[in-house]
Structures are given as C-alpha cells and as structure tokens.
Amino acid sequence: MNGVKKATTVRGSDIFPAPVYRRTVLEEIFKNAQVYFLEPLLAIERAHTLMLAGQKIIPQESAAICLRGLERLDAEQIKRESYDPDVEDLYFYIEKKLIELCGAEHAGRMRTARSRNDVDMTMYRMVLRARTLAVLQSLLVLREVMVNLAWDHRASLITAYTHQQPAQPTTLGHYLMASVEWMERDARRLQAAYSNLNRSPLGACAITGTGFPIDRDYTGALLGFEGLELNTFGAIASVDYLTEVCSTLMVSMVNLGRFTQDLLLWSTAEFAYLTLSDAFVQVSSIMPQKRNPVALEHVRILASRALTQAQGVLTSLHNTPFADMNDAEDGLQPTAYSAFDDAARALDLAAGLLETARFDTELMEERAHSNFLTVTELADVLVRSSGISFRTAHEIVSMAVKQAGHRDGSSDPQTIIDGVERAYPQVTGKAMGIAQQLLHRALDPRHFVDVRKTPGGPCAEVLAQAISAAREKLAADRSWMQTAAAHVEQAQQRLEEQTKAFLASTPAA
Image 1 (cartoon, one colour):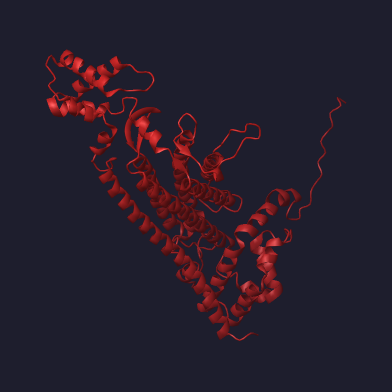
Image 2 (image 1 turned 30 degrees about the vertical axis):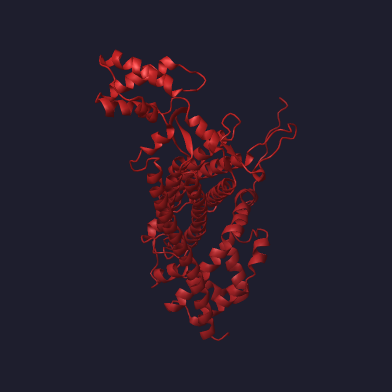
C-alpha cells in the first residue's frame, strides 16, 4: 500500500430527495420562496380558484372551501417553517396545508388547468415588476434632486473635461442636465421593459395550455397584469422578460457608476469642487484630519454589484434551451431581485447625499478662467471677423497658446491676444485688424457660455428651457409610475373584493 486511503462508495437511498440534493438545492430554494414567493403564490391560488368556479370547471362549493382554506393559512407562520422533505417546494407545501384544511378532494381540484410551470412564471413576473417599479421610483427621486441642482447652478461656471484634460468652460447646470438626460433614457428603457414584463403567463400550464375552458384574461387582470404572454410555449420557455429588464438595469448602473466616479474625483483635495455633508463622511481611525466621502464609494459598489448580478443573470441563461428548465427559475430569480434591490439602494443614497452636498462654485469659476479653456471661441472670432477658415484660425491660436506656454494652468488673456496678433500675419500674410475688445470678450468664460445657444448648449436661456422640459418629463414619468402602481394595487383590491363576494354568495359547508 502506498499510504493513500482508498475512497469508499456508500450506496445512497433511492428515496427523494437525496440528502445532498436537499442540502445544496431544495432547502435554499424553499428559504428563498418563503421570502419572495409566498404572497404572489397565494394571490395566484385565489385568482385561479375564482376563475375555475366562474367558468364552472370546478363546483362552486369546492371553490369556496378552498378559498376559505387559503384565508386560514398563517402566512407569517409559513415564513418561519423549516424545509419539509416530504414536499419538494413551497408550491407543494401549500398544497399539503390545503389538503389538511380542505380535504384532498377539494384541494385537489385547485390543480385543474394549471401547472407548477405557469404558476412559477407568474410569480417571477409579479416579484420582478415590483422591483422594477421600485428602481423607477428611485430614479425619479434622484432626477428631481438633479433637476433642482441644475436649476440652482445653471449659471455656475465649471471646466468641462475631455480625455481627463481641461477642455472648455461650461456650467455645472449643463453638466448635471447631461446626467438628467441619461436618467430619462434609463426610465424609458425600464418602462418599455416593464410593459413586456407585466404580461400574464398563467394558463399556459406545462407548456401547451389546457383543454379546459379557462379565462386567462380574467386571472391576468386579477393579478395586475396588463395583458397576456400569449403563446403558451413562449410563456413558459421565454426568458427575455427577465433578460430585457436586467439589461436595462445594467445600462442604468453603468451610467450611475460613471457619474459617481466624477463626484468622487471632485471630492478629492486636488479638485475640491464637492463637499459632502458630515452625515455622509467618515473619519479615519488613525488620521484625525480625514473626511472620507465613503457614501459615494457605497453608491459605486452598490451600482457595481447590481450591474454584476444583472450580468450574471444573462450569463446564466446564455446557451440554455428554449424550453422549461430550472436555469431560469428558483435558483436564479433571487439574483435578479438582489440586483434591483442594490440598484434602488444606490440611487436612493446618491439622491440623499446630493441633497445636502455643497459645490464650491467660486473655485470652479476661478478654474474656468485658466488652462486656455476659451481659445476655441477666440478662433471662432477670427473666423467671424476676418473670414479666414477655421483651420487657419486654429493654427494661429494654437501658435499663441504654445508661445504662452504656462505650465501652471494660468492663461493671461493679454498674453494670448499678443500671441495671436504676432501669429496672424505670419500665417495669413495679412494684418489682423480686429479690435482687442472683441478678442478680450472672446476669452471671457461667461461670454463663451452665453454664445453657445444651440439646442442642448450651456447658454443660460437654452439651459432653462431644457430644465423646464426635464420637469415636464419628470411629471409625466411620475404619472406613469402612479398609473402602473395603481393598476397593480387596484387588481389586488379587486381580487380581495371578488373573493369576499364569492364567499358571501356561497354558504360555508
């Protein structure tokens, strides 16, 4: 013998579930179902039972017994239960409880014209739509904060950067409105995904529907859906309701992460543009002088986590078959829910810290006067006043900047103008003949901003129009949110009312 122990194989029991399967899969799935799926499952049970009775597929008396049994279930107690190996999952656990309360014959009728497949797909959509609306609501809150900040700072000069280098002057309001617009696009994408998500698969049964005369529209309406996922095969096999909404979330979190990175850079001592309220900073355990803007770092990691989890959903579903399969079901769904929860937390935190943050507008404006930021307008003035091409004007101004050569970021206007006056005849062979007053005005950052009146530009008048339009879009999206949320809430109320009315019309046995 070489001292290596020989592995021994012990034949396990053929009784389901195998201990390792129970431990690694079923117990975890049951715990997740207790958290996420109990309420939607019970709502589906009620809606389906009402429909079966209304379509005269099961006796009214049996339906009433089952509905009363559902009312007697203690949801809070069920959430505390340990996994029962005698039942595979929450679906069969609820069935077992109903058999105990109603009898096997009555409870068994609830299974008519349905499958665990379409019940599961319905639950998943119900949970995911709530989280999609939560993220949309958080986006609305952040957008409102940003629009208000953009209005407050519509005239606050700041340096715009390209390739991480000082480029041109703009305003803080102009910068913030650029972020407001990606939030508007994120909202449109999520709304479109929600429209595809909020379609009822109930009634698709295993994958081919049923021969019973069910009313899919009725159950879908009672559960708050806006229509049907019509094809029964696709209602079970399709996963794009999930991948689409996760994809849109990924785009939103990339946007939020890039914005947050800018804010973190502005919070550095080197930039010193942004100061968070003391309520959002932490001190060092060893360095008394530190003010660490950790809330921004938490926004960044929450956004990154949401992005990663949403991406994980798509990766998990890549190259899976177009069929009923576990890959898209209980084991994966919580990853999507966690992504949306983290995204909402990131957006809420960003809104909270920005509401009380302070921008050093004096420092921003001071820096907007440096680094030759306005020389594009100087070149434009040469074009307007002398008729030379922009290429020639660019060459003249470039020569003046190189001659000025200030490495400390300063850019004295007179030095630049003197350089232009020397370079102009060298390049064109003509005298310049442009009043210095025009050239000085061209180098003023405020003038630079004011003349940029094209749609979307930083000019205060144009920016005010953009902010006004953003407020209108914000109001429209709030209205959309209220309508979407009310649709679901009203369906829940109808389900409760119709259950009560049905039971009132059917005496207890």
